[in-house]
Image (tube, rainbow, N blue to C red):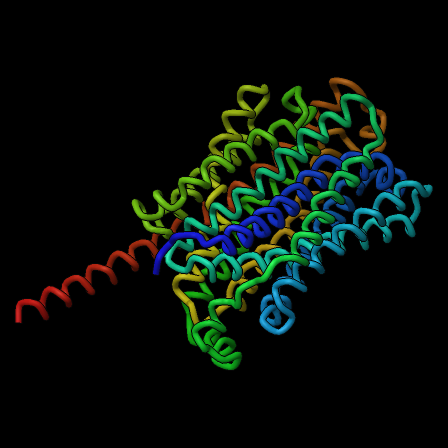
Length: 440
């Protein structure tokens, strides 16, 4: 099959890139406004547990993402890629408007619920994007899935760069933080208009004639998929949880806005994902995932120890290079190995990633809250802290939260090493078999 992109395919890639850009922008916006939500809403409701409450709120975005992806991937062939992407636009528009409205009401339990619903809607929109865009791109260029899916997901960090820089500008000029959410409306509206005028392909499962029943039965026939599905819980926690946590936890620790680290990390990821195809051929996808896990562990531990901007940037560089390949390479690995699993397998993988963060963020918030109260000597003492004393306490809490995450990619190292070794052994056996037949 030729890898030449036809004019129609170019428009499809444009739609895919814009949709991924939008969800990356959304992640940056959530990271930017996290501190505002905590200070303007959650601190007024429950100061002692405000970080855990914020973690739960941001985490519900990932829950919405996970469940939409779970059901959307199974139904995308019935609903259609076009409708799925239109639903994503609607989710981002309604969710952003609802959070803006909630921020204008005096803090209360009702306001907390409005924020939760707004974040849930953006999560539903995010899941719809992944449910449609991943099988769409895999169908357009099935021979280069690792390369194409990494290129597609390079626009995720591109969105984070734009969102982070705009967030910094809004903060610098003391503009209302709600403008971050207004910015998020723009790509959502543009995407809807573009989707309406685009003709989309059928998924790879449909084009190969595999039935729905066969697709669902594949889940129980592939133990390797179950192993990769478990790994996705851990790779997502290594990548996405720190991205939502960096501004909230590191800003006072390293003497700079944490969102700058997120912007820098996103730029590194955007560039490095364009080399994924070459690295996958050199190491194999499993080898690339092993290397990613090693660098992610080193980077996360180092981020927890960072005390200066230079140290933070160095640690962030190592972590970014590590995690940048995780999500798209996991998707490509499953799509290449299990074609009969179709969009369902990709959706199940994304579901695992989303639900991972739903559990991890509140836990990180709990670790951070407990650490800050303990370091201060109690809640009453913490409430009285200001200036350097407050920064020191938050630094301690930041160390504990980041270093607790560093354990996660370490768990992945022996698993990916096993898969890497298994693949090399299988490939060697095939070569020996072919050689034996040729000598007969």
